[in-house]
Length: 360
Image (cartoon, rainbow, N blue to C red):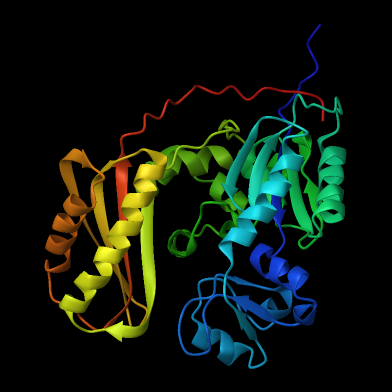
């Protein structure tokens, strides 16, 4: 007798317009109004937008100037990260009442593996509903959820019925779900890759599935194998309760554009101090140092250097940052500078994960 197929049960919880929703919750005067966290009508970049603002095309990562153009009535609010962390901590405490296998992606989203859970509930869908209800009742915010057999599908599904909704993709629905999906909605397929896929005649999951492994590796390198497998519902990445950072960074957007390298060095000293504090907090160091430059026209440039040894000290960081800064002449005035260290001295152990199967 053959055993009944069983699958992992993964929930992806994603808070709805988290930063903006926190601001609307704390300030009743902002409720029902278009809100942008971060930026201003003159400078800066939007970190998050309320759903009222999104109706006008306001999104995260666009300039405050553009947000104001799209939505003249928009209200800009300064971010309060300490408050967001406080709320996030409450939400994660709820998560851990259901499972210890919680993998945070950011303050406002996380994966939960509830294959074996503390409530003894065999239904991942009912657990997701219960978690969302508790977040609303105990925190005051809405969340959306995706439920499926792996992290990739769950992540995509959580965006389906936003805001304040959820979608379950059962084991026998996974391949059809992915086949019908527009390629731009595949998690991990960005704007540049989407355009490249369009040029290759790949517009949907079905189109992607029709391409051979050799074809995808030829055009997308190592990512080709990833695309080949995920469109077939194969994604064996485990939910890891502690994620190891791949880089540590610090950056700053200036109120007035900088046009002199001397002024830039002054600012980079401050940024390097912040980076050094973060490196010490996490007890890490890195070999690859990257200088990020965003110009007044919003174009961006990065300059990197890999050292033969690990560094975390501010003086060594600045020594290399100065070299990168003067590597070539600035093409315009600068609105943002950032420094990051990657290639960290953290050991990443890659476990071979088997896609287990349990009744959904």
